[in-house]
Image (cartoon, rainbow, N blue to C red):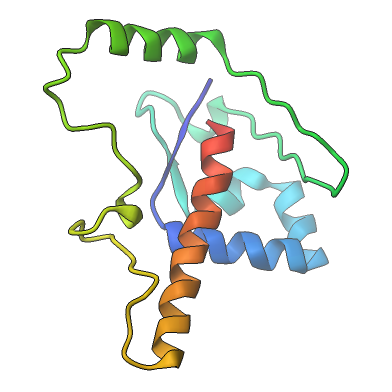
Length: 138
């Protein structure tokens, strides 16, 4: 299974929100999801090219349940990493935007004014939205 790495989390979250709200943008996304996503993500495996992968978008509806069964190779790789790990590597982490002290950290409470705090919270939400989508597509 091909995996994606987010290069612009805030931009992806904002794009996803706009795409879901805009029928024409949604149509453009459905016609060529690779081109649309390539603005915000890259392939994690450097030996793969966009032509090597297929993207199948699934749009949730209120009463749908989309059950994605992971590829066994990913499960086995994770289990092997846990089994053979010395646990001396960095701790199991959160995305950069959630980690205080990281240059990409977004503090949803930052700002001295209400307008500034709303802007920070919106930025954090866009990151969360993109992360939510990407973690379910890996």
